[in-house]
Image 1 (cartoon, one colour):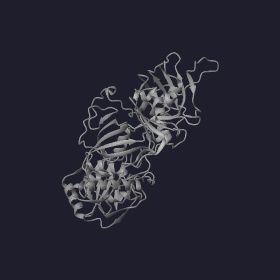
Image 2: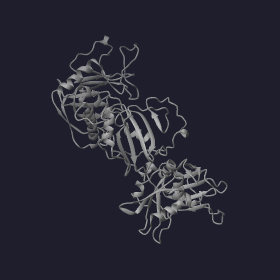
Image 3: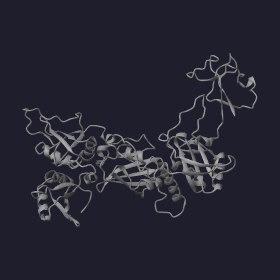
Image 4: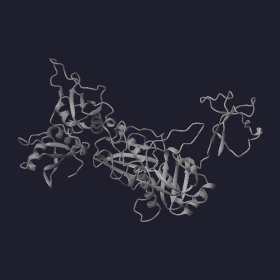
Length: 560
């Protein structure tokens, strides 16, 4: 048992609003006390010269038990400054539920207790600290308490680690941490919190791969190559950083397009973090049912980043210039979803098999777009409905009466508007690079009855040609940036290649054509350029092929 001494200004009046102070005598200077002074109850009162006043009835005291460090995992109440902290509910406590076999608090143990961790510490950081000393069998990270437990296969490895760090203080993410033996001989984790169990296992597997055993090519690399398939929602550097930083420190990142697909190179701080991210995230969806991650190792050991902008980022050097994004290669994936609602579905990663997007998260923003630099001789509401309909359901289109190279396009959902910006801004349409931005208007107004409009405004809300009417439609998984190759569908069996090639040749040069071998209702056609493909899509989508069949045209990521 320990006695906790407090003194308060004003004798027996001890308002909680006034910090406790410790005084040696009434006339002495006040010395602030940052925490209670614990004195064994059996110990006689301290002499006055120590600076502690003699106990009187006017000084409140609190009697409490001094707890060993490992007891911080317990949920029993603890008295601090005379008050008990509230219990953390199961939903608020992000630590795994553990069962610890308690043994004698003295002597070595296979389990090492690490305290004073930085707030952004991950399981991979803890595992990396233990890698030089031997193979590890379990790890438990208590984020809310800034503590961790690391279990080794061999007790001697734990002894070596503790002995070394008693003489050489350990650091994680540039912050000193304290290493000691745990009072427990073994960590036992249950499956009640698979989210963090998966995180721990990913970090341990990554460490095992790096330390030894059957080695695969690239296991000691730190740079990952990521391809995002089924890109329905925009993905940018911030989104990827939020995902991959769960496994360790992200140093650099570059995003780009290649073969009409969104790709990224991400350099992690160490092989353990890179391997854990790869094991955990490969094959997972960023958002529900779309934006699938395909991850492999890059042959590059170090990324050369010259600018910090929406295409590249050096997180170790925030002072790099932004450069001129307009001079970079067109990168139609830089737009960002305003926020990510939640990460669901934990996987073997460290913070994520992630990723559920609710409508509100992607829907923050405006659904009305301002489209400028159009060819006013060719633009019509129907043409814009067809083009922008590739990326969402268009409800209304208004070509401005006094400035006919500008138009307002109202999408069904704000995230569809963001998708259209990401894919169509600066794309060449009818020989001119159009600009697509969010409008200050939140609604496209229809002309009042009797007001002349010359057919410049049209409502498509109830159009049967919407591609995304049905949630979960395959169209949601086949959204790609403008490309020279077009995907054709809904082709009746009597239509031949020559007929389709001749029809598309009216809008540009046809380079190649191929029916799908197992489904002749679909085909691929390649135009001479992306510009011609865009023009052909506008003209040929919904083209009548029979009384009951109308052609469906979309951009493809495939090649012929």
